[in-house]
Figure 1: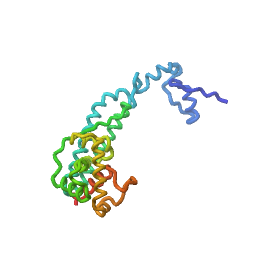
Figure 2: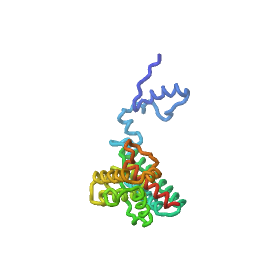
Figure 3: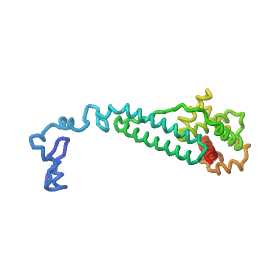
Figure 4: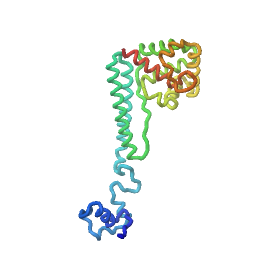
Length: 253
């Protein structure tokens, strides 16, 4: 039986033995002679591409590009927010659809850049970019207010203002409900000098009041009973996302 050597980083002979079984007659290292293949494992490893004391996934030299890539990523996220905002402001459905598509393209670019940064550093880079935007158009705010009144959310409770702001924020940034605890609640709380936990409780309380006192037919028409929980009413995130989508559909007609 042929003895098979255990290959190491510099064992060209062992690699040749394997190569002969795969492709007889081919020499994978025609330029290497036996005298040069006896180098130590340490010396061999240091000749590998990107091999340094603290190598990164794409080679240590790529680390000089990290700050540039991070800047590009922040710009892409900012552009995505701007396009999302424009899609919420335009009264024409086809234009809104085009702006949303542009926003999604920018988000894809940002994800690609984030992947490159991760390959270089081995760490996730997820900056929170907030682009200063003008006030929401009056017709958009009025549309949100009308839907809340129609559902039966009383205007005198704190949760009404929190829900209204949360819906408008979601219209600006469609991804906000995906991180409702880490993004939306803190953002609303900051505007009203409150706390995220208070915002969450007040929103839930306002929804409870609406479902106890509001028009059941209107609620069924808007939500179609599609709730994830067993309470018979939507969660804060479901409520906000549904109303935001409804308003966008209304202004896009």
